[in-house]
Length: 118
Image 1 (cartoon, rainbow, N blue to C red):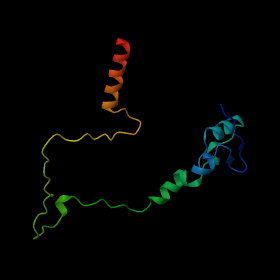
Image 2 (image 1 turned 180 degrees about the vertical axis):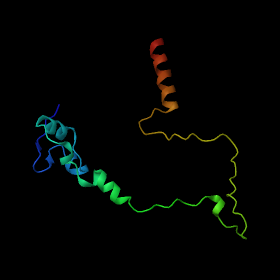
Image 3 (image 1 turned 60 degrees about the vertical axis):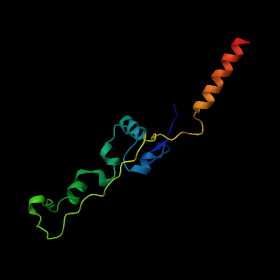
Image 4 (image 1 turned 180 degrees about the horizontal axis):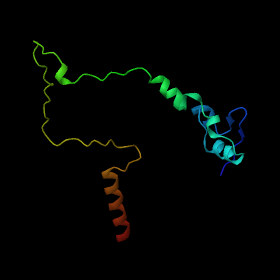
């Protein structure tokens, strides 16, 4: 288990997540609880309820439904034609360089059987 240094006055933790995301990581929370401080004092303002309400205080109108659309005189756009290919479909999985090939496995198996016979 690693130890990390927390500086509450500077808002710094050696783990780095406290500075990166703007809210306390588990190391900072443990330190705040140990000193019996208020956790909300160490969270950035844009994570608080007041900031959320400020952002969404304006009216957000709903998007109109299909029944509100106007009729068009243009022709209906059809999806493109997809031709089905003949034959067995290819495997979706692409082999990696580290994967064993079927031929290699078969050759190793034959060699093992040959060694056991001799």
